[in-house]
Image (cartoon, rainbow, N blue to C red; front, top):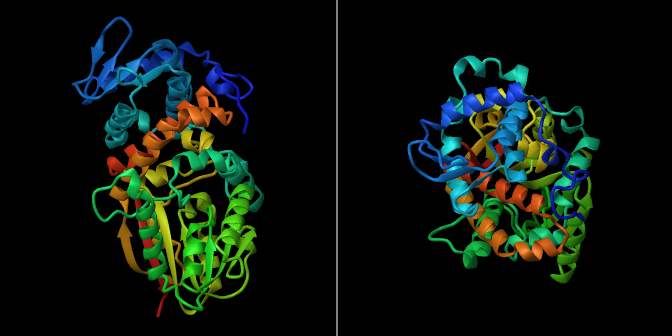
Length: 411
């Protein structure tokens, strides 16, 4: 992906253009000022006025633009305002302050808007585009927009395993131990799925190949599928470099195209890209592909069930800019879509994900100049910084969770 510096209109049209509606902006201003007065934040406005009860600093640099974006598209506008530089955190856009600001808001997300206006939410929010709902052709395009950005981009902030999901820490963490924590996460999933010598393993969602390589090193025969051309190319090269090409088959395919029978199936943080209307299809595919006596291990990011229901049909900032077509299930939604499968074990990695994201964020900020040299502009940088901080805040506030579920057939 090649970008240019500044707010290039062709690349970032909704960041470059400020919405025109002053009426919506005035209403958003009123709601925003009302909400922040009672939050444990310090909201600084031009001229030195401060609001909030004290806490991490949010600086609103261009209130008029900020409120009009907020009024026009709610949380999408809130994110676009950050991308445009209408607001920042800390004295110099400090990333730790950004996480702290977003954590305060995530902890109080359901109370920021008055109940009377919350009932009108569905009339005001944007609907998810029809081409992002999870059909096969949609999913290919959605995957391409995120995972095919650039292998070099992801290599700058991920660890040597190129693993892009929650790690599993057994103690105090540092950047030097993230790779080991990622391997610990993978090994637990493989153990739960009972992967060993001779196991026929299907992995849905290859990533950049680390899980497939570790499974093959155990003696498993691995079939792994991805829709990302970039991931397929690097995972294929890694398998060849490791001398495991004879044990690892990497397919550029949708999970709905897979056939065969497998002793074990593993899928790590892939259900989030399936789309809510296709969750039954996903779990039915898992059940049909699983050999008798087999096990499934999946890792899934979840959100509270009531919030999931409230956002099922809405278009969010994350969907618009980061993961088009993405939708997080609740634990209840997972359980209700299992068909003849059942959960035999579960483990939360919520705190582990917050730590993983902190390390990714720190690494990203350390490497921002190298990332810029790849062709990513300042708006992309602010977008990606917000994405990592927003995600970390979701786990720190306990609004988000992530689970390893082990599944088997009902007896």
